[in-house]
Image 1 (tube, rainbow, N blue to C red):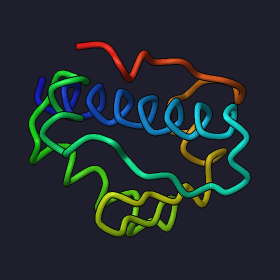
Image 2: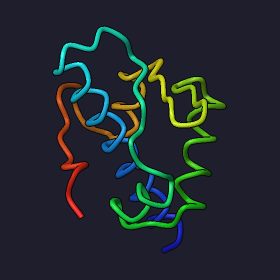
Image 3: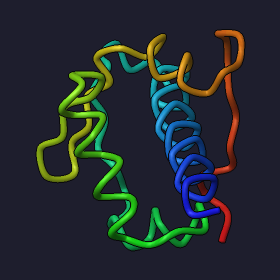
Image 4: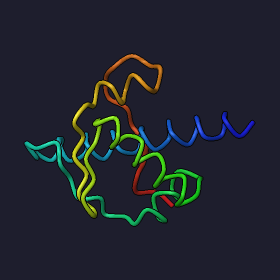
Length: 100
């Protein structure tokens, strides 16, 4: 059961990151780097998990070189690989990152 919960939290975080990335790109930002306007605690609250789980998943994505994290700056290096972890077709993914 714990593995399923971790898998769900990982997918929620991926959707969250991709949605933030797409929102910035939609605002005309030409780079894959964006400033995360939330603390890890706030991200955890928004996706229904713990800060520790968010930190663990971000570290995993960084080790796999899918993202780079520097303070509140996140660079998505491999958006298609992140989408692949969702087990869905590539294309826009929307999570309302501003609710809660």
